[in-house]
Image: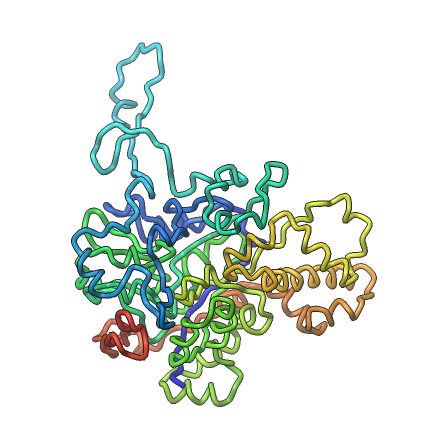
Length: 493
């Protein structure tokens, strides 16, 4: 066992109101420079929809993430080293500026210099920030905001469902999906980078780009299945979400978490076994969710704590891992799910799926929502189809998503019954395999958790903080190496 720490995030989609505050504060903090006009490290999408960039989830088109070859070995979908080398100067698997959007500025001088006495009010017209030429604004990072699935017919997730759910106007549904870089345990961008500029920090698992080493080959853009690596068109360098590492090192949450209006984000530490990553990423598709959960180590296990001490982690980190809300949501309550586990990158930003209203509200009005059978029946009538959520979070396993939604619905029913008359049917708790104490603790974390409960991030020791900028501690692995077989893991200490 090789223990490693990972700073991870969980987002409760039930609380996202689509205000885009996280996107704006991230933009102002990290990408308000020339060359990053189209770059959104954090964006909030409306699902169903084609997303940003357009159709980023269509890996048959963009070749992102990992696949298993004929011999069951993990390999980049974009191809091996020889294939990628042959495309180093002309990579066809890249989104164009039209798949993002052409950044615009506006001719503001006309408002100042327009002569008096005009019949018509002068209007600022958009001009391309790239060419300076007049243009029409036809797309943007949140163009589908709150459209309720009006462009959802082209959603790649619906296409993969192949008739499991009939997309009808009368049954339109929508929810908001905030996205940042996943800071994966098995990042395809790191392995795809020919120059070794992409690396994963050993101390906290954050994936970063060494700007001095980056040569702008753009293989990382293709390799990332979430399309969260961008190229600064002014510098020619790759840029991506940094997980606000200066704030993390100071024990503070990311800026998107700090400013989140809905309080839907949770930050914390996870221990994981580095030796188990390759096997988890190579698991059959139906076992990927359990395989990734199996990589995480129990922070209360004495052997795990001792291994962390021997690996050089401070006691504050060991205590933080035990208090981590992320651990509770992912492994203890098991209600958080990864985004597209079938990409095999082992993402470390997980989601609590939304528990939407019951579609047949009239039919549900006379039911007893404290009865386990009725709660189960309600899950099949939610406005957001379970099958659609399964395409997003469990590689198509509707039963796994249904189990999570059942826990959330049972928690609401339990708390409602306990608050109103104090009578709770035991079969409701038995059905979800939790006791009353666990359900109430889960409720407190999801509904009323305070700042210190949602964000548990230990400050780096002064020596560790200085070492974060030092030399590479782990050399790049070989093609036949035990970890990241297609490129080698690059970590810094």
